[in-house]
Length: 169
Image (tube, rainbow, N blue to C red; front, side, top):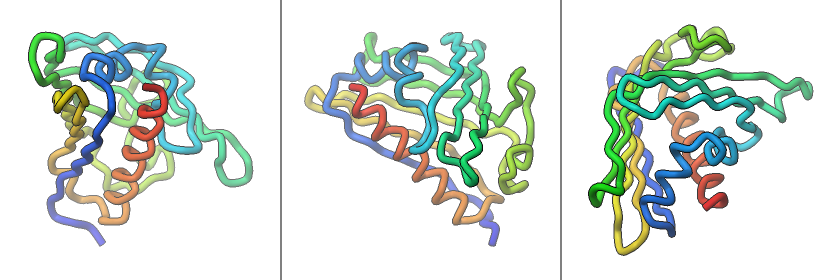
């Protein structure tokens, strides 16, 4: 069952200052340690952290059905970047898509997923200081057209990734 309009919002509290969480989110060697939900490892990270800069990430499913490993590529362009070093709250806004290994946009169906996934999604991540800790909020506005089950899976995938990030911190 498709839904008309829905926003994906995930909030996570880290027992670390925003600068440390920011570094783990924006530095290649740190991202590789946590990116991807449970059962996946990051195998390729390219990041050009500037407005207009691009990123390309690959995660490999290590527990795929039948024991076969599978790569999933995502990429996009950064639209807004505000480091938490300069203020109490940092922010990253990006346009994100499924891609092939060369960074070309592909539909979710390329990876056997629901064809109703949007080709592009805006992702906004804020890093807000709260009593020395970091409240991270991830928002994907208007991911309508996908099922409520797929929306739930997206949210759970992000939560799993953020739990892995917490362990890295």
